[in-house]
Length: 222
Image 1 (spheres, rainbow, N blue to C red):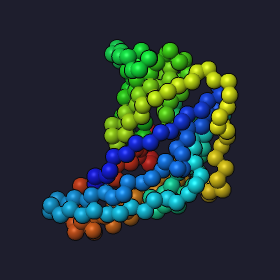
Image 2: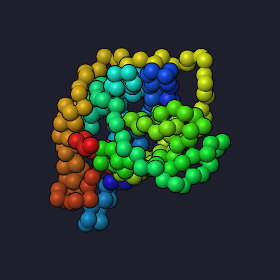
Image 3: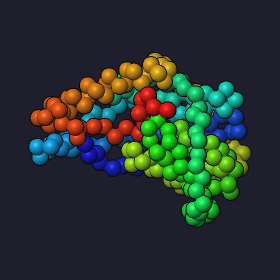
Image 4: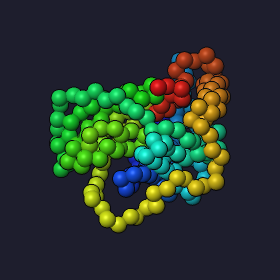
C-alpha cells in the first residue's frame, strides 16, 4: 500500500519537568488517496476519510512520574487518549558525527516497538528529549528516522533557554475516552485487521500478503 508522502510542522515544549509534543489540528490534513496494488497487478485508488476535529493532538510527558498521555485515533477514526509509561530506550552510540545546521551531532540507534530508529543528537542543547515518544539521549534529538515506516523527524529551530511559555504544558483535556496502551493495542489490532481484510477484498485477492499498513510501531512490541 503506497501513500502520498506529506510533511507538517510539529512543536515540542519542555519546562524541565514536563513536555508536550504537539501535532496541530489545522495541519492534520490526511493524504487524499492511497494506491493498493495486488500481486495480480491490479491497481486502485482509495479515498481516505480524515478525522474531523479542531483540537490538537498532543503527547504529554511527566518525567517525575515517568508517565505519558497522548491523543490518537483508532483505524476506524474514533478518537481516544492513551496512557503509558515513558519508554526506557537502550541506545547504541556510533562514532559518526556530522553537522546539522548549527549543531554538531552524533549518531545513535535503538529499537522501540518493532521499529529501528537512527537518531542524530547534539549535546549543544543538553536536554534528554526528542520528537514523539523518543528521548533518553544526553542531548536533544536533531534528526530521527523510523526505519519501519520510513518516517523522519528533523529539528528546524530551537529556542533554548526560553523564558516565555507559548503553549500550555498539561495532559490532553479533550474529553475523549481513555485507554491503557495494552487495551488500545488490543482494540487497534482488531481494527487494523478489519482494514487489511477490506483492502485485500478490494484488491481482489483476500490472501495477498502485500496488503499491509506501514504503522510507525507494532502494538505489542517492546
